[in-house]
Length: 276
Image (cartoon, rainbow, N blue to C red; front, side, top):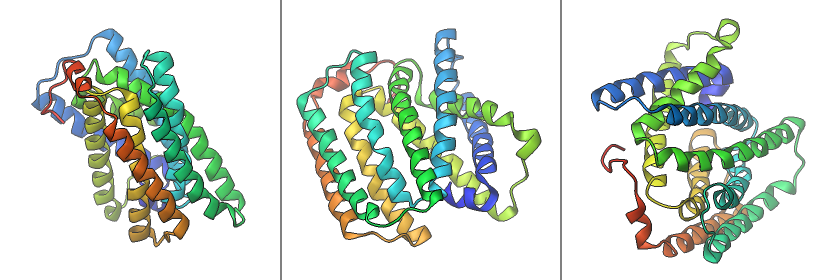
């Protein structure tokens, strides 16, 4: 998505990914004979899709101006917010070990940012950082909606309706900004949509089978992949502070995994295990 946004513009990257993801989702909905959701579930799909459209716009606008790893690191404030939103909205008990794991992950993020904050940010980078923080607030809300949604809908349904709602949101700007992507960008559009749809389905499956507080600390591992991909695709350097922070984040993930209770998976609702 960073490459697409830089080459064809943010709006068209988001629009064409939503179009491709919607077509893929519709095909899978028909192939697996998914039932049409109830009205209450449709409202949840509409709310989450709208939140994600705003969140994605802010985040992808930010990564056009920041290194991938730094943008991911800044976004790690979201899981900590979501941890307490889960207690407030889902009535989940937040254990001390889960809180400790999240805080350890945030310490790792602080170490990473300390290396970046030694230099001077230009105006675009500062705006990008603010955009990431704005998207983080929406992402925290998204995590809670994701948990509620996964309890009522299959992974394929969740992914399809999210792309469909996002397409509806971005479609309002089509008369003004839409353009056909060049031939060279088409494979990236297809890949971005496939990755987005697959990850949405996998997350829906996971959040249907475990409490949010058990899964949220594992979100920190996204930094590792961002650092690797940023280095490979955009020659973004990995600094010693980045490595040190990553080690702390991995430690937080391991702590979270060890605190997982076996009976969490006995609470799984109707989502079929094989559909993701």
